[in-house]
Image 1 (spheres, one colour):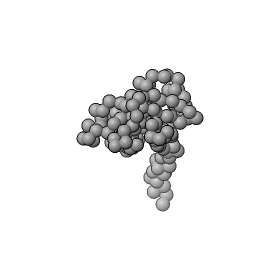
Image 2 (cartoon, helix red, strand yellow):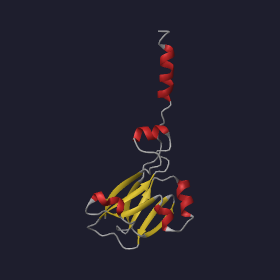
Image 3 (cartoon, one colour):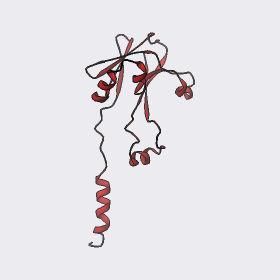
Length: 141
């Protein structure tokens, strides 16, 4: 047993250092009779920092709404839906310039710039350093 202890100690240390995620999941829902999109779950410090810049381009670096194309493999080539972003109590409200169509599917893409920044993230996700990590949430009015 004494011979196995030096081998077990590094393994116990390695597995005890795993990080547990306490992040709130990002959620979306249509509000105002489907005329706007409510977005929750982002870090309030990030939201408040971006809300100081009134341009839509600043918001699109973190999150954007797109129309879902008929060929979903072309999703990455879609232009962002124009509109305005407002913040109210750490909740982001996106209001498009033209109303959401009832028969159209849309997707909300948000980027997580903290993901993939450590070596263990890169190993787990099998992605390349410097690639952007994003999540798409699909919705319909």
